[in-house]
Image (tube, rainbow, N blue to C red; front, top):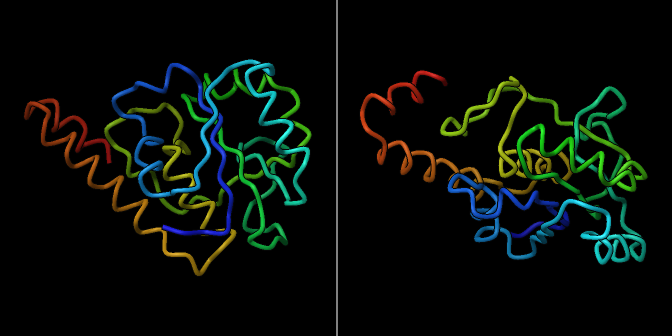
Length: 177
């Protein structure tokens, strides 16, 4: 899949080898995806230098009381989207350990449906996998882009994981849709 939107994922180290990690799928679909694993500002020092040297608009995809709707931003597709990969708690911790991220405008997605990533439980109704958030964000910035390669990959992963589960466990996950 090709897009003009530059996607950079700041990934919590505990997510790297997680069996249900959607960023692994993103790597196979988005050839220009950049993933930086770390927790502290020192872990992201090279990324900070990279961001400081760009002329592109940079947005942090993180919903908050201060965030603005990504679709309402008057931007071109010449943007960098920063995403935090981890549970809500881990993403919040990444944000707290990296106050430099607050230098970038925070944006959120206008959700119209629940997550299709039913194999991973979340307490918040607005929870999305990093892959789903990326697909929606790219679509918001670049409406003509076909994000089906991302969403199809996720659907295949979900179905594969569901089929590998014992029937009683699978029923619990299918019932959570």
